[in-house]
Length: 322
Image (cartoon, rainbow, N blue to C red; front, side, top):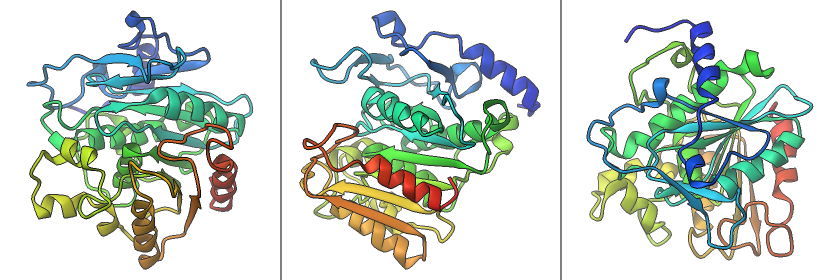
């Protein structure tokens, strides 16, 4: 497919931003102030010829508020944008978690976006495909979406009044694994370029891995994420390839890590292993270990969750130019 120019790309993005999300027909409108658009032209992600799953948006838990939702069996990957009232010239790509079975966009997308938009960041929350849903790229389907999303965010910098070289990436839980896959490994093309956005480099200014899934082998693995990525009987080579502490590039941007020591789902040893790997490569990094919070603490206020990690991240980000 021939490349199109940037003006055509942005016009298409603006037009598609008015499309309803997959969940809207189920009674989950996009929260006020947010804008959603597909990341792939026409909403069609690559390698979907054999995909038969149907995308669904539900409440994250039965007790969740109406904007605390999660997407499963994603067919149309999207970005949901929240613009800051007072832009600071930077943006953050948010990658929510969900064990590679769903994307918890309410807790780790909308809520976090509101917090960082208050600090001046244009915030883009990614809803990405699941690796076990039959996509041609298999385990790399979510990576394709993450690479495309980062490039698309960078391509929108002029329109949205931020610097393309001041884009951060923040991922949570399995989304932390995807964020590390996107930013900590030497970038490798996971799909064929399709338009002007794909001329953008796969590069972030700062990365944050929040209670991340990192290891794919050993006593601290999150077995659910591994199964979704590799099936029930992965080979040692498969596990090594996606154990991101074993694949850190010296070109990794500065990294912020946060984890609760009482996390029973994704042990904090995942963050510690990543910290050691970053230090071995000389990558600027900072890691906060909290005594409580469990897994997926998000923005739950103290004392139920750790100290205000967003303030710690903002200080780290500003020190490194984000």
